[in-house]
Length: 258
Image (tube, rainbow, N blue to C red):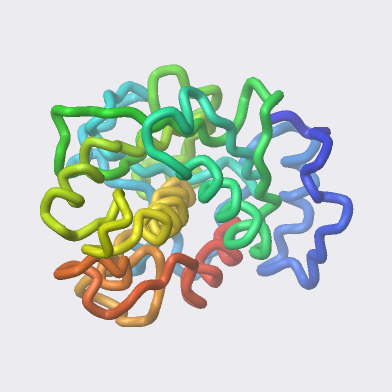
């Protein structure tokens, strides 16, 4: 990612205390674009918590190659978090706006420097929306493609510590249409199902969380979070309510690991 992009808000970021002595590591990042050392020395990349890259055995990811259905979540290489649209905003109405709002409203208030760019050719995450008709049950997913611009591990030999710059998030309008047909998401203003704008807000926050190492929370912690399908607001799925934002623990995980 470029280190001097206009409008990134880095000049007015309120950093506060840097956690667990990573000041030197952060200075190294700015100069070399290399990842910082994992900051959770006491419990590095503990698979029992709700943070970490997807394990190889469960996602089919291998050496930077994946296709559009492998759902391989990775980590970011450092605190700079730039998003850019590839083919984006053409199929799923309003999703591009919701993604940009989530970047500034959910992720930039953490210790990350999160922003949208239209000029950086090496963003941390590329965003696509399309009609992948072969996946009617998948509204969104992430992967680290062969075209990634940086790949590595914070801790050697530990899959959960894998980072990837140039991840892709895909938002699938076909799946939204299927949810609408089932009466779960309202895309026409009929009043049946969760309004599309609400579903879009939830999905924008949810998929970005995966590119930072945040995992699914359903069946586990019950706190409100966009990482928990039980808080998606979708009838029959999001039975706890609608929470299109990061939970307190999500922010703790981000701030401890970056």
